Image 1 (cartoon, rainbow, N blue to C red):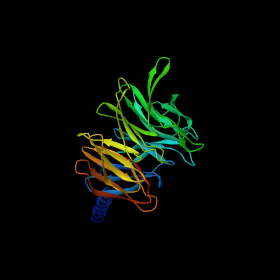
Image 2 (image 1 turned 120 degrees about the vertical axis):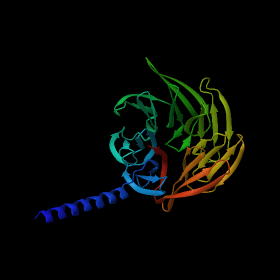
Image 3 (image 1 turned 60 degrees about the vertical axis):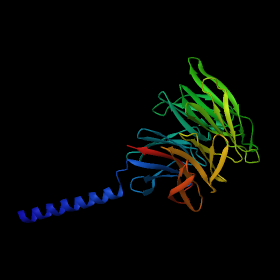
Image 4 (image 1 turned 180 degrees about the vertical axis):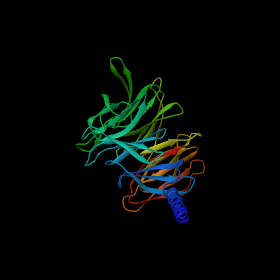
Length: 335
């Protein structure tokens, strides 16, 4: 009887070890990976940068995911809620798990998110406002900012908002503005800077405010504006003959831009424009060291993440992110 018991224990232990090994193979210890938000399939995929392995559709998002913010081990996805409920998805990136889904005002079309001093700031494009939530994602305040605000970021105690001027009634674009908002005891104080048509993205690069104006897709092409954060004076502007939807600035001053209809472009010395790649669906761009990573959206065929060297203008090591995913926001998570 003892012999049979020992044999049974050994078999159980061996089976447990095999099961654990298989589980580890299925759920790798991802500590250096690319977070890929798929806007059409409404999922999140993870790409292990060390193992060159894609894990598809690990998390299901809310309706129409549009933005990704990474804070430590937490990822926050803004779901615009087309034909559904607008919401924020809170994700444990280390465990690749959805922690919670926080609803936002119905019909508000939330677009982007920023974090500052314990609060989250979400642009509600259809409501012409920024929604303020505390660290528990409970609404605590709001303020208006022009017409159809989209891009948002925080810098030096201020919230910066790109107000596109979009009129949903006739699909035209009015004047575009950058709003600079400061919280005061009395509420919020606002300054504004008039920029070009359809400013969709605002970022801080080299301690300057960069605003990307996409243009109106009807002949008025885009521009990048460089603004002094202290004086709010426009120090420079770069006019381009395409419709930039996102951009990134690199250490030598080179700028990479995406144009959804036309591809990836490089700007040097604030004026020399090169075509990096002609491709439909060039969407978001992020920077990892001195490398650009570009997501390329496709509604029916393969989606890709391209690595771009801004110095050599070479695209290399494309990641196939899957069929008909509609890849959009991307981010790097390392632990």
